[in-house]
Length: 430
Image (cartoon, rainbow, N blue to C red; front, side):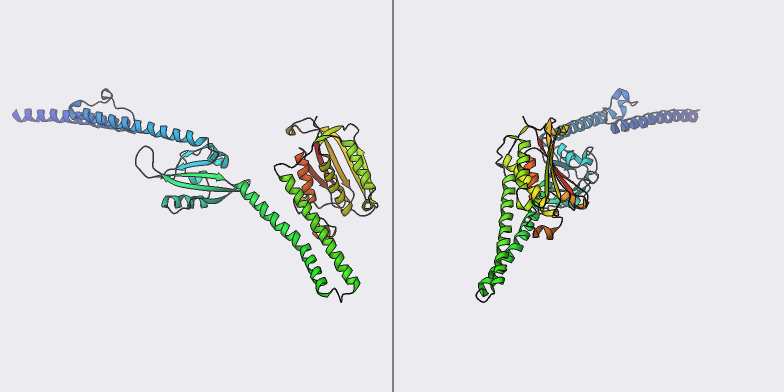
């Protein structure tokens, strides 16, 4: 009996121990789930009695969870403050964690890189796709980066240039791997202006070099051998010097005109002028010129066109450039027509009415590939012929600048072999 009693007691004790063990395992399982969910552990919510010392453990875990919550809120607050501070900057700002995730990206970054709209918590390689920028990030982390670094990004709209400045910063809430802060300044416009400036200097140098070389060569020849030189040769050299000095003077005057038009004060003298009278007077003046004697110049002016606020001298310069081009590049017997009509201005231009003026010829026309470049500086369809006729390649660029200063637009239409038509508009300002 005693053995049976002992066995029964042991069995009951074992069963109780198993029950308690099961309850302990269940409680620990619930505790683990609560920790994963970062929820506070409630003693009554666990199927565990305090007998196992779980009360102290629960209190410690709850304190850790509370501290973790405070740190998370503090971190979020710091990031929000940082984002508020940097969000108003025009420069793009991005903060990258040690695991290459984006911790902060301001609105300027989104305008610079469209893929950065949902950048937070993403790998920065997905936001800014550039091997050069990835190398710069690593250089900043290693402390070997230059203070400022220019990076070219290929986008759907072309190449975008960015000046990047990077530094490492300590996390604001707790010690850890440093973050990387980058400020990106868009310098695409400066790069384009620099390219334009370089092209302009190169073109000016080229345009000046040819006539200067001829003038210098002819002058040296005259200096060395003018006593023995036949009169016919001396006259030919002198005419060459005169012709190319005139070309140099014209080129310099056109350059000065462009410089004045592009300055902060282009010197417009706006006054009320009758467009109809101005066009008719210009047409009459050109008909009387010997250079136009072999051409027919007609004017078709809409009688509804009244007065407009313009700089008459500069608009006359526009017509002179267009008419001179038509006279130079059309054969004798060609017809040059000046037309002007009044029409509603496009809505995106502010509405109202505008005057559209056209100078049309029936000459050889312009190849289609050249049309988009006609108003660029120094651009010529036939470079050799243009220089023979004394053209500088700046006339149409001057036309464009003057018209734009008046708030108008320029364009050209042409079919090769069927003439060309140059259009410009002038707003009818009251």
